[in-house]
Length: 342
Image (cartoon, rainbow, N blue to C red; front, side):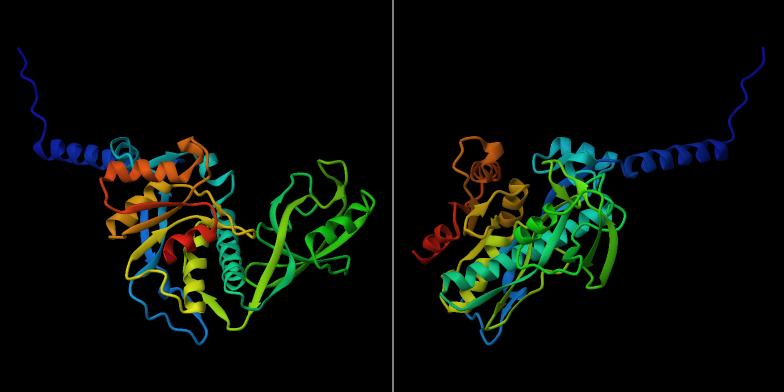
């Protein structure tokens, strides 16, 4: 009878190491999915500066963030056991945008949030301001637009055929009177400040009218005295709008809204003063609670469905965390001020 040959110990060790390496690579190799988890809680006093004003009151206002990254097998397994971590498909997270486009859109939303916050703060404080029209932001480019490979998301169109306008409505009215197939030249500014000019053709858009094939929104700048500077670093998105407004208003008026409290929150700020819904509210409650915030201001849509009402989602998250942080629902920026002043 033949005896089985013994495997060389060195070979056996090498195979084991190789299998471990393969397993680790599989565990940590990025997938096409994204993971969303609690991010950071950032003090706004360091980001917002109103010229000639100094906020010396105790306590802080905080914005809250979520952390988004490419998911791997390890994070997908972790998310299964952690209710404050979510997995999303690429389409769900980015809407089909590539990384550069996704970042540009989030930069646009952050810039818009800051701009609207300044506007709202000066309006609430009865301080003079001027809304300066810069052009129209490009939010989406139709597949049949002749500018599809020329324009980029978050570009600002400043002129059409050499004509400038005072609102997006004026620009749309002008373009809609033109003939489909005719040549059109647009001037636009990139988010980095560089200026460009491109020529294409008018097309028939979804509503049957003449257009250039973009979704747009007014790009305005609020000019104020004193000047307001906001530096949020790499943070993007619109969800800090309400908290920016409160910090600017507090510095501008000198009012002690915090009364020594650590106040976190989330929610967009709209031109009519309403506070809009945001994503990842449970993660933001988690990071605010971890950092010791005493109050969390959150949008209340008024609906009874948790999926469409941040306030209900925040309450559920607070209950899971067993936090003593007070969850305060707000529908408008005036609601937030009323709560803080009382």
